[in-house]
Each structure stands twice: as structure tokens, then as C-alpha cells.
Image (cartoon, rainbow, N blue to C red; front, side):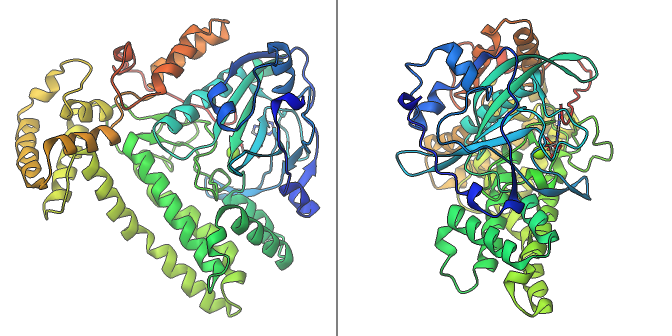
Length: 483
Ligand code: AMP
Ligand code: MG
């Protein structure tokens, strides 16, 4: 398999044994390639051009491990809906770290690859629908310019997986700048072994934040860096109406990439309390709660770092608390800047915040579509909607136009700012379901088409209109965890 140019250098494998279980993917019966991301492969400097589909199926099912891989299941813990639990890769293996020509390091992970020491009562497998869904949404997020893990391939296993129904099994190849999670720190921290904690800390700093290595207090700097990264990430989610759905601490990366596309979905009608996940009955992970949950998760991360911040525990707690408490102000400032970009506003006016909030209040009251309202403001709405003739909206628009005049910048630049920040198309829930159903029946045209459409969410292109209109059904969309 040399012709592919795999370049493995497995540093996580070299950490102490407590970080992992050495385990190979469990071979599957009849692998069959469904999706392959050749653009992503090229950007990793991998060359599959001389590889047959059969061989690709064998590689991306885990039946044929590349030379230089060293597969492991990673140990981690996490707060799931607020409750602390031991977790770990129960249905995934990291086959290794591939280093690209530009010296960037990528985890290559198979999801749905069979049982591990962390499987608990699970079967270690994944179903085709959810793996294709992760592929679609993660790639859409990347095109939306939001940090995320990527999807390289999906292969059907030829085996059934038993959920509520019998489903087709599949393996997804996930590419990430690492799989170190807040939950990884929680797991090591709970073991109360300071050397292990230092090992993880040093490893993480080397891999993701080398610049802070020589700072006066690298532990405080790591906390600062993660606060910054995660604040930026959640702002991006809010910008496009993305609802992660399961923001447990094991699903929060230290790299700042979005991870774990289980019950996630995009909001259509603007309602801050929107929840799609069937198990989130209290709305813990509702759209509007995402920033506060980010802060909560960051506080769990800060707790792990206490022994590294200062030998005096009280002092360390005080420092960490101050950092965590700075989150709200930081978030508010960044959120206002982001919303101003969505509205094409430059400079600062006292009334800006109210202008933003009044639009959102109107959208909520009138059940406006979040994405298409901004499309309307850019004069790029998919179809004329009478909602925009509403008197209150027109009054708001007059205020907005007056504010645009204070931009001290050209109208073209203002429009460009809006177009860089407001997607014309998002993975709409009914469309995603439609293409998944077809793919499950072996018709891959619709999924390939939606992938093509979602590849360029900020520009108007052929056929996009079919993907812009909200669902006509009023039935509430439901998503599921651990599927
Ligand atoms: P998730 O909801 O995907 O974040 O998964 C939470 C935990 O459950 C992780 O430790 C997963 O590895 C584990 N898990 C989810 N599905 C399965 C499965 N089918 N078999 C074994 N473990 C699983
Ligand atoms: Mg997870």
C-alpha cells in the first residue's frame, strides 16, 4: 500500500498504557465503499488514484490496516448530561496519526469498528444512516468555515446492526487534528496521578499550543487558549443555527474542532429553545443554552488543571475561577461582533445590540426562518415570502438601513461582509433525511448531490434553490444519540 503515501507517526500510542487499549478493528463480512472524500484525501497528501474500489472498501472498513498504523481505543471519561462517567472509545479505534507534507498531524479514526474494552453493553458498531449523516454534516460544517473533524470515507460492513430496527452496519473514517477531549483530561485527572496529568498536559501543549510552552504559567495559558477556542466555536454554531445536541464534556475537543455528530441538527424556524435530540427532555443542550454549557464544560476542564496552575490549591482555584468567569463578557462581545457581521454593520453605535435583539425577537414571534431571513436582507432569498411584508419587520428594516448609512464604508463591502457570514444553504433536516433514505436503498445520487450543494454554502449556484426552502411539514424533527 506504499503508493497511497500514508505517513504514520503514532505519538499518542507512545504515552503510557493507561491512556489506551491496544486493539485492532474487528474485521467485517462484506465491505462496500459508499462515500469517499477524494478532496480531503488530496489535502492530506494521500493518493488513492491507483487503488481499486474493492481495496478502498477493505482499507476503510478496517479489514486491511495500512502499514505503520498502530490501532488503539482511547480512554476518556466525561460528564454526560451533567453526570460523570467512565467512557472511552467504545466503537472506534484510532489507527494512527498521519503527518502531511506540510507537517500537519491528523488522527485517522474508524468509527463503528467493533467492540473495545470501553464498549460496556454496546455492540461496538454503527449504522449506515448515522455515519452518512456525520459525513454530510461534518463536511457541511467545514464548508461553512467552522472548525470540525472531517469525514474521509463511509463503508458498509455487510453486517446487520440491531437497534430499534435491523439496520445496515457501516464504518466512518474520521479525520481530526486530535481526539483529545475535555473528557480525556477528566479521566486522567480522576486517576490522581500527577505524572500522568503532566504527560497529558505536555503532550497537548506540544501538539496543539506549542507557543505557550515557554510562558510563565502554561497551565493558565492552556485554559485561556481553550476558553478562546471554544468561545469562537460556539459563536460559529450560533451564527449558522447549528445545534450540537449532545455537548457532554467527552464531546468537547481541546483542538477546538466540533466533534460527534450524533443528534445534531440545524435550526430552521428561529426559536432559541430549539432542541432536536429525543433524549434531551429538559432542553439542557437547546440552541440558546449552548454558550452557557460551553462555559460549564470549560469549568470542568479548569478543574483538571488545578494541580498544574499553582501548588497552593486555593490560589489555583481562584485563578481558574476568574478565567472561567471571564467567559460571559468575552462571549457577549464576540456574539455582538458576529451578529453585526451578519447584518453588514461596521463601526460601533450604541443601538447596535438593540437592533440585533429586535430582529431576533421579531423572527421568534413570527416564526421566521433563521437562514432565509438573512438571505432576504442580502436580497438572496430563495422565494418571496409574505412574512417580510410584516409592518414590524419593515419598521425594523428602516432602522437597519439608517444604521447602514453610518457604516463609513461602501455598500459593496457591507454586502460582502454579510455574504461571507450568512450561508445561503444549510443541511436542512428534511433534505438530509431524504438523501439518507435514498442511500439506504442504494441510490447514492441524492447524497452526492447534497454534498455538492453544501460544498459552497456562501455562493449562489445552480440547483441550490431546492435545498433552501424549509420543510412544509409541521411535525417536530427528532434526532437520536448513540445510533
Ligand atoms: P456518543 O454518544 O457517541 O458520544 O458516545 C458515548 C459513549 O458511548 C462513548 O464512550 C461511545 O464509545 C459509546 N458508544 C456509543 N455507541 C456505542 C456502541 N454501539 N457500542 C459501544 N459503545 C458505544
Ligand atoms: Mg462522543
